[in-house]
Length: 265
Image (tube, rainbow, N blue to C red; front, side, top):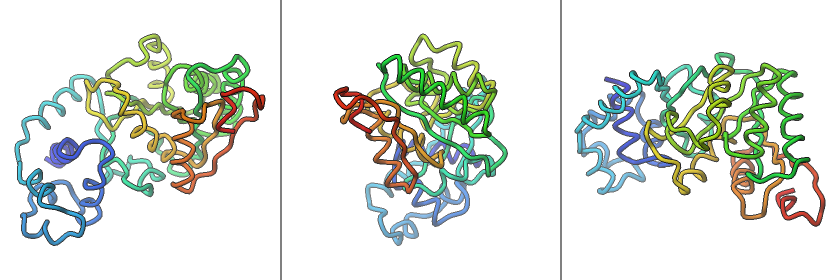
């Protein structure tokens, strides 16, 4: 019942919601949140009538469908109340209340981790450096976190895999959805060397609006972020700014000053 209630709450308010984690600060289980009455909810600062109306809908049909799909596809559901939930992620603003996981999250809570992000259309130099840094850091015991997108993300995962290091891919779609479509082989390797995770339920398409929401998890999973090439308006820039807001260290690979991909640096 606890997992069903977690899915119910996640679906009620959607990814990136501030309401779901707020309720998790007040209560110690999703079943408790599911059963709390409207009068008590109205006493919580930040909870509006609109929120209460959503919480009054106790229909679990969609939650059961998602849970059954996860079982069929071998997807684990890790909630913010579970021991397996990443410790770094708990402390960010609006943490995801649950993660859908293919593979295995690290059991060692003290393992250092770095996010490596950058352009989807990097230079040869950028792709090479992302792979090199990921491999070198992986050999030194770091977990490498990225988003499995084309370009720098894919290079970072490849470097970590070459080092036989832990690597985690955070998706802006369901973990059962292959995006980009050419990354099937690397996705399998990531699941073997770590985990592919998402805040979005199985079957969710990779919509453009999902990626800024996803980026807070990429940086939130990590102790630091390394940006390897990115335009000023890129997702890499968004991740760097979110990381700073989360209190993470941000590093940038130096690039040619006349290259637009060096803007984030």
